[in-house]
Length: 461
Ligand code: ATP
Ligand code: MG
Ligand code: MG
Ligand code: MG
Image 1: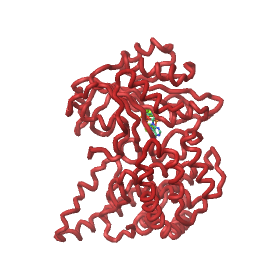
Image 2: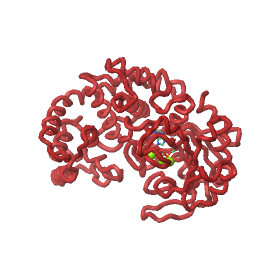
Image 3: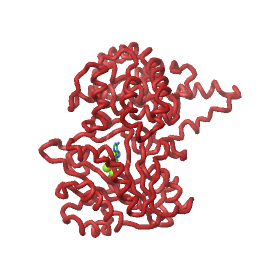
Image 4: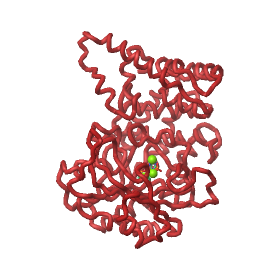
């Protein structure tokens, strides 16, 4: 089953116009990357732009959730359901239909097109949303409709922008397959897999945090293609689907290290995930950089390299996986085919840069770790790893997580700020107007994006 096509065809028949996936770098300074299908439609939701004709849309949108409000970087490799880059299937109503039809369409698609077992479906609604609850009762029994708070059932794109209560469809993969205390509806486990979020767009949040009603209540939905694929293919992990299997197999081939579906396979999964994110970002024109989006790209690549290093890699290898990905996704995204060689060259160069310092950095890390008695790792060393060996903070944190320790973040931040101050002092009167610290820090939620530019002496090019 071509799920992507089935979805778009279904909604096209219901009067929706099919839109292509918009760029990963949005036309919106408040957002690091496109993190949901609604991003390209934001000005329509807010009323800044008039609703198109027809006022209904659908898309399969490439999304990135690394940095910014919805950041899944830490989850990748450790859950069965999270990726940095994934495809979100969505249908949208711009002041046209609202809850009633949105729920009817979703139910029809899930039960009649996807043919998911109704007995495995669970619905969550916002605790205040009796209206949605009533509508759902037409389709599912009351005991399958569960109320949740803001954390799970109030959706927002970022700190500002359109938002509203939501209702989500979950698929119970079975108690026999999962057995962890986190596995309850709304928990952090993978048993009750969240598949589809229906957002009832009713408000706009401004910079002060105030909610004002949108000109017209609208609908924004999002369903993860990789998760649906897993269910349809009868596996309980996205990484075992036909989307990820070829990439995992390629990692096995290159590293010569067997793959395990449990936590021993985290490095394989991280690499398989990160290769997708890095390839798409490069193919769409993002470049490795010391700040902003380019620094997120660098962090993702270096995390991938570090996991390869754990599997015994001593030289560039990520770029060798690109062909496998392009073979798989080039039909849907032809620019991947066109940009393939350029992507591989850029990736290989960045890998070389990091491989040049990774040995020394890892040595320093291991020595320091051996000296760490409690569970707090030295902030000075983390800073040195960052500043001298090109280890982004989150990479060091990722390594520490494996041994149940964490960075002394206060010291790290202090050193980072001191460096920033030095840089500021040095630049005073230098006439270099290009550097604007405010700009560097604008990606709010991700504090460390952008600081690196303030370092003169950073060894990373
Ligand atoms: P979760 O609770 O599993 O982290 P979420 O509530 O953050 O998901 P939404 O923001 O509601 O996700 O996004 C809509 C849909 O997109 C989800 O229901 C899921 O199917 C899919 N999705 C979200 N995040 C990811 C991800 N990191 N990787 C793959 N699919 C995702
Ligand atoms: Mg999430
Ligand atoms: Mg959720
Ligand atoms: Mg959700």
